[in-house]
Image 1 (spheres, rainbow, N blue to C red):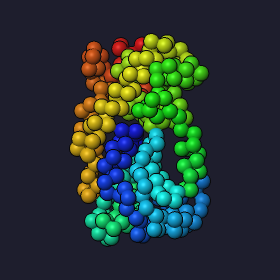
Image 2 (cartoon, rainbow, N blue to C red):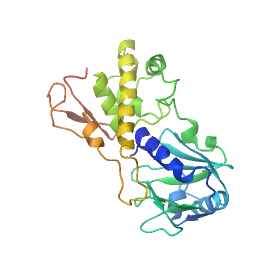
Image 3 (cartoon, rainbow, N blue to C red):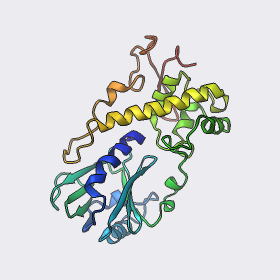
Length: 276
């Protein structure tokens, strides 16, 4: 699932394509892609998106947590990629391959595709209309994300640290990959309770989170997403990962084999020797 760095890279790469451009037509090809979270009203959601997007201009392309936001002169189009959703760009009104939603602009067409149909595209009048956005916690790249703020949040939680970091209501945008990476860099065991993390450890963790996310963002931007390539995906991320997906391989610090444990159905990777 794309996390903060991947979605931020998509937002930055997409801006030159659509910012300031008017949507000449919106086509919902597979209504399941716009279905509300309740699973009902896909047809109405598709009609709403097509009607409201038509003739709207894109004022800005932003990100909030793992959500991509196309802010329009009326309302916004919100995209959540979930597991496999991605964007494609066609230089004409025609699209090819699997596309769920197509937004036609004067310069070309932006397509949202997700063969597994977990991702969602929605038109909303206000960002507060989506509970998942309304409840999002602090952004790791914002000035509000400080060591003290992180320490205060952890002090109020009895969750294991890994689950704390995955809670989007506490910190927005961190997922399974970069939570494991940040905890390894900070040398903290993912199974420790958040409220038992000391202030000095919180400072290390804060620094590690920012460092890991910034490094991943740089990797995602070099090379930048190529929306014209149907097979594009972020390249080189596996080379910067120290623990995620490396079960049984030697820790890059101490050579101890990396372990994998399951926490609430999610895989966590860590070094039992380095992370206390």
